[in-house]
Amino acid sequence: EKLYRINDWGNGYFHISETGEVEVRLKDKSPQSSISLLSIAKGLQERGLKLPVLLRFSNILDDRIQHINESFLHAIQDAGYQGTYRGVYPIKVNQQQQVVEEICKYGQQYHHGLETGSKAELIIALAHIDDPEAYIICNGYKDEEYIDLALKGLQLGINTVLVVEMPGEVGIILQRSRALGIKPNIGLRMKPSTMASGHWTDSGGDRSVFGLNTTQVIQVVDRLRKENMLDCLKLLHYHLGSQIPNIHDIRVGATEAARFYAGLVQEGAPMGLLDIGGGLAIDYDGSHSNSPNSRNYTTKEYCDDVVEEIMTICKEEKISHPTIISESGRALVSYYSVLLMNILDTNVFWDGKNGEEVVYDQMLMPALENLLYVRTMLNEKNAQECLNDLNYYREEIRNKFLYGKVNMRERAAAEHVYWSIVAEIQQKYGDIHAAEIQKLEHQLSDIYYGNFSLFQSLPDVWAIDQLFPIMPIHRLETKPDRKAVLSDITCDSEGKIDKFITAKGVSDTLALHTPKEDEDYILGVFLVGAYQETLGDLHNLLGDTNVVSITYEDGNFSLHNELEGDTVADVLSYVEYEPKRLETMIRTKAEKAVQEGRITVQERRRIISAYTAGLRGYTYYETDQEE
Ligand code: PLP
Image (cartoon, rainbow, N blue to C red; front, side, top):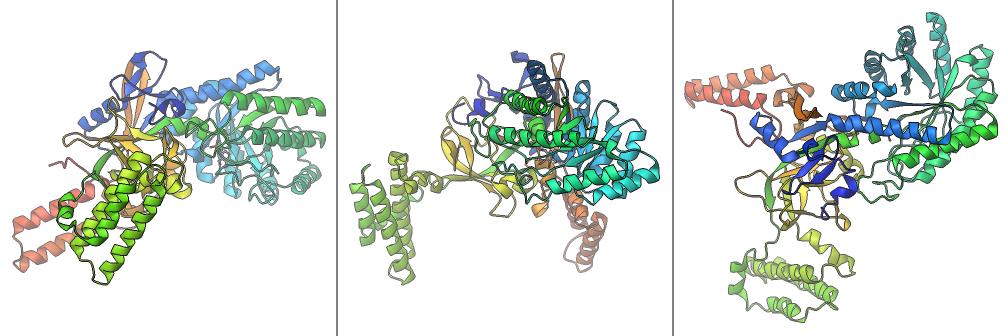
């Protein structure tokens, strides 16, 4: 538990069982509503669904929707706030059909709506929202078609709001609304001057690429008034950025927006809706701090503070309380998905003796004596000095090798002695206050090769060094015996993970067990429900993983919505190959080989069937090949 700090980031959804397996808790605290991830993985493998697989837990999504809605409703009640709350889920955070469908299903009782950032997303939203009390907030760049769709949504009784992101959009909205004879609900997106800290916070500040500055807000109001359309202005929107770690920034942002909102009411717009955007953060590293992968507040505090700030300003400005809309995405879907991968191989960097036999024949080599002398001098006080000397003598030997004064065997012996002493320093004094010595653990660590693609399944780890909790999902009753970094199976040296959430906070190695010969060693990557699935790409043509959903209902777990990941043929067609044509090319080539007497017709048949099986296969490493 302490090694991986599951209780700090698991948020009550994940824990370790007495038998040393990670369990996901899907309903209440009763043991019956928890299920072991290993048992799910085994069940899937028996059904022929291979790792890597992405698991989605519907009950977690249900719980997240409840949690956010109830937190706002309580904050509203406790403060005596006169308005209400409506959430909208930003489709871009995870657009997969099953995700949007489940959000609409579980969100129905709260009139939870959707936020769209493009035409395609609006097309999804219009089909999924039936509730006249839910909103579809239309953000993003809008052409006539986008605007027409939103206006026609109003005719269907769906509450669409067209949010003006750029001054030029007003003209098109007015023109299309006149042409179709449908009055729009218009919103304005303001540029907050508040710049929040964090990874994804470029949405705030003067140079933000989205929204209207104060002058532009006034220009739009004047234009609407002039065109007799000010009565359509209903909503003010702002978005400080995603994953805002510090509650201070959220409060300041809400205050600034509430003042703008009041300004618009005073200009004579009907208003009624204040949309605070996304930004509610997830505590990925479990540190409960204002570091970029965490947050220094709870959902309750977030809701209480937003309600309080808006209420205070409304009182001062003597205006009625708006309906608060929030566009939380990450906070809704992060916990929902877990990626499971099997370890395919390990590269043990230093096992305490590597190559011992090489060494002892060569003990008389003078340079080796220098290295061995360092070992005799080693103590806590001079550990860094010894490391410096070791590096010096090793370099000396490498230079002599370049000039032919040390042969390959002698060099191998020296390297062995070097690493054995470095390992000794790390073991005995690895925790002392010296950065170079602390780094030795990483330098001596193993490489574990996981059956996954970082670029496909965890793109934010590659792009912005995001941290996700990673740990073995079984064997946790025994202490891990290795320290490792994780590599994926793309042929890209960037496809590795060497930042992990551990007992020390964040470390550059992860404690893992030595895999057993006859059993898969399975790791879970947690909290991957937001942004990762569609941002992922096809590097090395590794495609979508298998996906399966798990639901707990009336005391039973069920697997459903099993989606097979991409086959090789699928990914080839994404990059414009025609699998049929490739097959024909191989058939022709094999026929030529038969004609030239290089293979028999039977061999030709086997070659073709291996090729077509390859096309049908999973893009990831397959261990148990089907006949
Ligand atoms: N709303 C808008 C306009 C966004 O750009 C984003 C994402 O950055 C969100 C909502 C979702 O933010 P989050 O996932 O932090 O809730």
